Image (cartoon, rainbow, N blue to C red; front, side, top):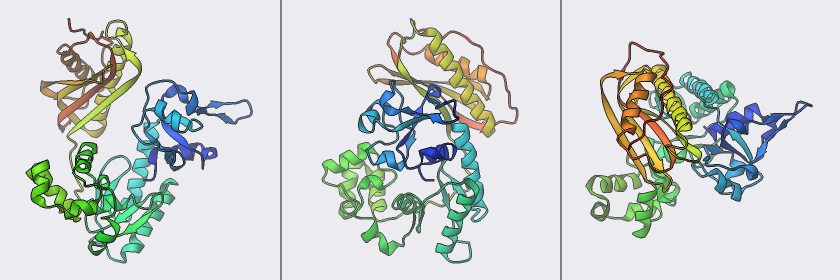
Length: 372
């Protein structure tokens, strides 16, 4: 889906079409409704806090803003951009709509997140271009939103090609097209090459996929290890044997939040306690909504010096109960130092199993435990 969260917001606020819009504000960034019925939006230049960008319209991206960037930094790049809060309930609604639209045309779907899917077209009759255009039309009719599609022999290439002609793009690529279409691209366009690997490849003089394709497998394995080095060589040549998996189980569910200001475990005890309770309730709700229970609960802390620590605990039996998740998170917190200011808190549920008994109990409003 094209700039998915932002595009959903433009359905709600059509007067913002064509303007730079950034999604990532809190609830207090809701636009004000004036007496004449018009809306007054908050501009990014007026933002003060620790929030990060969830997504942005393409009109904002041309100024260099991107997902994960701090809103304060984005305000320096495009101060006149409109800032809107994220509405994940709406995004999940439109996610279900677009996936249902695709399933009506091509039912072999691998869910890859709220705004992305893989589709197997190999068993469908008809011309590939016509099928892809039909999918785009169905998504548009069902949601009012546009999507970009890459049609290739495998998932790795389709991931790359879905991003080549955004927004509202359609790229069809065969293996013979790889040297002309794929090799000139930066290596970071390959899903699986993260910032660290990209930086290390650049230090080795490899910045394009073409240069990566020319590198010897042994050379890559010497610098990146046997498995990852071999994968890099195959990926550069467009080799990917992964099938489209129509049914898969999530490994974990998590929620985290970065605070508007650094919070002290003692001085801001009540604030942190409420945040912890909300995070645990959200994780438990996610578990119940997806039909899972968790046996391992983890917490994630990021201190004001950006040092990050995690702790986890294994329960005697799986749970999707918010109070049980909260108690487990408290046990984890007792095993870390809480004498330093915090900038982020997260809760994760893993070791998942299908849950047949879904509890709706809410957690107690306990105090955040402190490690002495």
